[in-house]
Length: 294
Image (cartoon, rainbow, N blue to C red):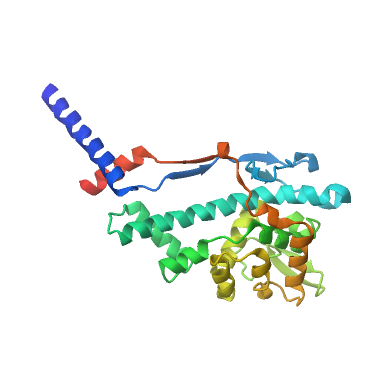
């Protein structure tokens, strides 16, 4: 019995040593675990909204709705910006992490290194989800455009949060629905004075996630995606969003909002380091290595 235990411990030790050697020799074997500690806040009034710092934010998820019509004009803009900003930054960081994971897989493929089944499954799911034709195409689709552009579109489409579609359906981007299988609600289109269906979301974070996915999937945004992959600024990108809205002045209106409100200062906003955790999961590393070896 004792001899068997010693042999088992020796085998385990050899496996751990092999994992460490593999980790050092290949730089990466398992993609680091990604997690953001997000605080959920139930909105009761404008005072529920945290005034964020300009360079880094506390990641929060606002639950419930806020009637921006009742907020005084003098503070409505700043409340709206701070209400939207966390959701946009969180999704921006999430997409960058997905992109890094794809690049990690691509690197291992190029270097002919082994890939875990989890990574292969992740890669397959991403290719299907984003309807990508290649790794390069997938990376282009995942790469997020500047925060300033997202914030400006939300500002314009929601009228600084005062639209019914925003307040009742958590839809700041005015995204319409064309399928009864989607979560949606019927609203009056103020421009055409006709009723139309708009997507309905559980919260702002979900709407931002779908907005980025929406622009990543549709073929009509191919030129837009190519330009943002080339690190195009919000001002350069806005002219490629003509298909987003029927109004001919849409691009100039979004550009005006970006400039007047100095939105480009938010493009470098990140999540405060203490809320962002990015580490190697060594238990998963050993488990994956055992699976591949044995």
